[in-house]
Image (cartoon, rainbow, N blue to C red; front, top):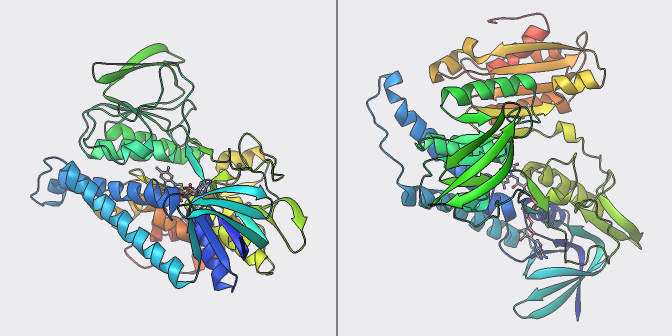
Length: 472
Ligand SMILES: Cc1cc2nc3c(=O)[nH]c(=O)nc-3n(C[C@H](O)[C@H](O)[C@H](O)COP(=O)(O)OP(=O)(O)OC[C@H]3O[C@@H](n4cnc5c(N)ncnc54)[C@H](O)[C@@H]3O)c2cc1C
């Protein structure tokens, strides 16, 4: 027997569940299929638990530096069990909330492993037997991603000495000398966490020439400087060539322009990216052509041929770049698909307009183009940088960094906002409005920010580019 729905969604991560909630809100009958827990990577293995650990890291850093503020406190150590309990409680509360919301909105959550029978029929292997779900308006692929391994001799993930972020979230100790491979968001966040938790030596190794390789070069410089100040050993332009385990530790041979060296640690975390989950679910038999495992889509996130009144879509981490592999990117993709399935007119997503966030200390937030990208595209631009060292609130917080704004030459629209410093991941919310509303620097400069706040740095960077600098 088969059940008929307007929308059948495979995978209940941020992409799948956001699509389900928006579609249900638009009056569609929705089935959301999940083989593990609703919330997916972000809620259980990604954004939420890592940011809880980073919150604990911030508290540890406050204790370590309390004397700078005339406060008597000491940092002794991390009570790992209690810290994990705190992190788990945050995940649990969000998970409960999500389950109730899905229920309240009438989304039919079907637990089990899904497999495409054809482009509009999903077979689900549930505890009660197989169910067949037929989609009338849309079948949405949202099966997400898992950590990528590294093709280096001896680097097999064992979950103990050689781990991924999935294992790092449940470590029952603070590693003493962790080595992190990969300086993208996940890598620099864990380097930050372990450094703040009191690890003796943290080393991060990146094959490309800078930490957070996709960010603006000025951001990369600040992060490198701050990591150095914190004693994090960052090796960029450096490639791991061999990994050996032994005596409860790990030796990693790395190579760079200066030659070969061997790093010794008690733990190796592989954080070189994630691969899409698209195999063994009948995608190709249903007409989905994969590209290096990703599901290519058109600008409306459609896949494969149309059927009478409906079609397949794909969202989230299974999309190839330029989709960003971020939870909020998958939210936006989920909304776009739900709205289309409900017959609404939609506007394709500008991936450059989706804010990028990294919660290292200092944090990084950016939107739009980097300076290097503008140069590469031959765009003429003006730029302004406002340092947090001139911002009263940041001075109180004893933090550095800057806000950098790039705008089309001669008060043209803002093309990029780059924040590195305190609360950059929150501050970039304003940057994304400025970018997406195609604001001009003079328009932003006209409005005033509350004083004293970190947000003034954003205002001041725009004032500077508009020729009305106040403090910088
Ligand atoms: C350590 C880490 C930190 C991160 N931090 C951030 C952050 O701070 N901010 C941010 O924006 N992003 C962050 N991300 C990225 C973010 O988690 C992902 O971009 C997001 O979760 C992708 O959502 P998704 O819906 O595409 O896939 P997923 O969340 O991976 O969900 C896919 C779901 O599909 C299910 N599934 C797969 N196959 C089947 C099947 N056959 N049948 C049934 N169900 C199936 C899976 O069980 C899973 O629940 C982080 C990621 C990691 C790993």
